[in-house]
Amino acid sequence: MIPKLHLHSLLYSPTLKVCVVFFLSIMVCKPAAAQYYLYDDKYYDNPFLFEAGVSLAAMNSLTDVGGRRGKGTSGVKDFNFKNTKPAGSVYVAMGYQNVFAARIEATVGAIKGYDSILESVKKSNAVGRYNRNLNFRSRISEITLTGEFHPILFFANYNEDQFPPNLSPYLIAGIGVYHFNPQAYYKGNWIDLQPLHTEGQGFAEYPARKNYTLTQVNFPFGIGFRYELTRFLNVRFEGIFRKLTTDYLDDVSTRYIQPELFAKYLRGTNLTNALILNNRGRADALPEATTAQPGGIRGNPNNEDHYMTLNLKVGLVIGRERVANSPRKTNQQKCPRLF
Image 1 (cartoon, rainbow, N blue to C red):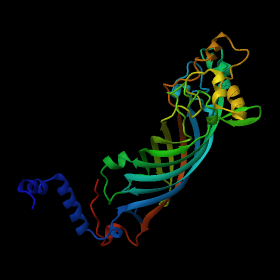
Image 2 (cartoon, rainbow, N blue to C red):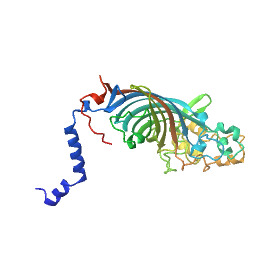
Image 3 (cartoon, one colour):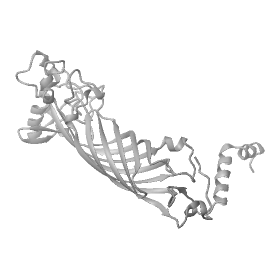
Image 4 (tube, helix red, strand yellow):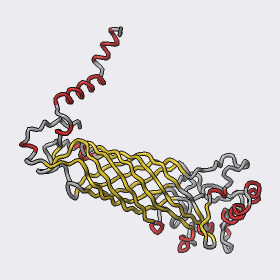
């Protein structure tokens, strides 16, 4: 038997009140198929809409390699448009009352960076990075689960008898899993860098430098704009930034190691490649390149890497239904909007 005090608390709890209101709203409304939110004078939206689409994107990154004039940073100041590569995606989404949506999306693309891009500014304080002479590329494969929030539609308090606006800005955030594989170009070949342990990752002499995995979690977030082309098609423009938990997207993070250590852990081709690719400082480098000695700065471990996309999407909307007459003149039961 429930004690009286607990029963009283239960009866007057906010959670129970919400449940009762929700239950009563279901009881007084007809099945969900009869609920609608007016799209225009000929079509209406069911509370849940589905969408499937494709995306053409431009992908770029912020890493230790390359960049722009001056000291390297993790901010947009070091963003170089010349490194932009094409990308694409497919997605499916489910939206609720045009305000919230959940989306699953698969993206493929590529990123790159190279210190020689700084040749035109090598006499500035970017000379250290130019003389470092590193380069990389990486293909990116990603699957994300994200949520959308349309603030204007949420706060405008429009109801089911009003047409929603054709243009709606929104916020997007979520979680993803991505695969990358940094490679360096050397004498006509692209060489995988992760197996080379170029900064002593996994070596006993550097216990703080852990091996990095090529499949990791990321956290995408950004903003977008959705425009309704027709009742069945929309277009979106999005800018999505990925927060990563690694600084090895480009295989560069911290300081040079003693080159003789590679022979202790590597053999054959991997040993040869590690000795060549861990330190590619220019032979004609200025005195600033003395930092390329063991213990010298190779990358900045305080700036984690990132990648981002600008996306143009086209989506097919599923769930809008035609009515013979205006919904205002039908006998359909309209359930109140929850938000």
